[in-house]
Length: 362
Image 1 (spheres, helix red, strand yellow):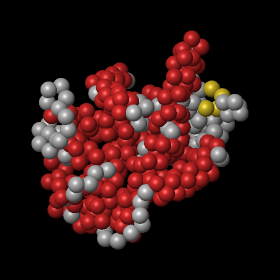
Image 2 (image 1 turned 60 degrees about the vertical axis):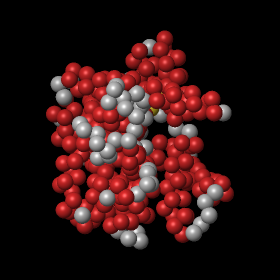
Image 3 (image 1 turned 45 degrees about the vertical axis):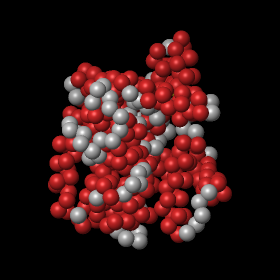
């Protein structure tokens, strides 16, 4: 078992190293430059499309632009913005946030192209409903000879979405924030109970198909973001004098890595900090991972570019806005220096510091 763990750790370290930097940042920059930064130039148009200004009820598809975006965001706004940012700061300090921003800005271009392809080359599932995603545009765009690649992506996506990964994060959050502070013993039984409860709730939504998933996400995601935004504004207001200094520190630390505690990369700690920020940024916004095209591929539209423009708003909302709010909360409260916790526990400590009683539950 130790041999398997060691192999998986080395494989993950390799894949999330230089290949990640080349594919996500290099590939994204190439697409942005090739398109002459089209996603950024049409940001206003993207918002109009999202508002439904150009909607046509006769267009093919299953869900609206807004539902597609919130469905994609439901997979990214959450643990990646809360636990992921906390881990990045705990290991890399404030400078890690800057490289998460870089990952998000480049990721906006990646999502624009991948989600445009999801509309341009989409197919139908076994029930006859229009669907999209990498496995579809590989088959429809590249041809039947590339079917093995589509199958490989589907299998990799299935493994990556297994409940063992997602439930583990939520179980830790519930245990650290709800159970342990109230004197409840945390162990196998409590974890099993939480897992079963989450499986039942999630199953109820998933078994309703894409329409139920999109309707649920379109209501929950905006509510989550607004509630989180208000809570963070309260914290930043309480610590208003600290905000400018830490915001400046994000930029200066990005190139000095004074607080970086991880392994060096390419001969230096700054290289390690860059990789850390890109890793956490990719984990947060999932640009280039292939999950967003599945949601946007089912959007009710006949214009691929319009859906690509809507999709590119995802990394901006997810990383530039929500992750920045989390980062500033952790930094201005000082818990990143005074607490040994990391992940969701560190974020909860930051909220508890400025908003007693209800803070950790937000």
